Amino acid sequence: MRTPFSLIAAFVALLALTACEPEVGSPDWCEAMKEKPKGDWTANEAGDFAKNCVM
Image (cartoon, rainbow, N blue to C red):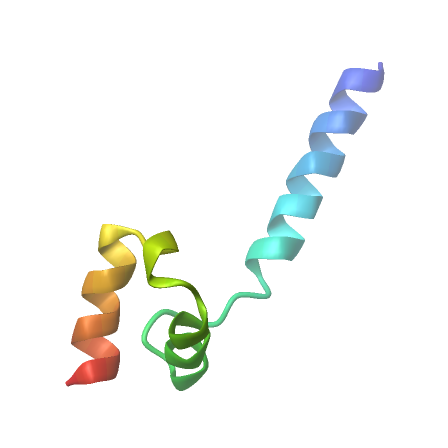
């Protein structure tokens, strides 16, 4: 009985955390990426940054 509750709680927590991130390519996202260490960027993030924030 405890397992379904744990799964639901984890899903709700995950949803709450991902809803707080700015949309990729938005000015807020570009600012957040500028503050994030470049070594922590993924290849997709680097490509999106170059496409949306540099050009």
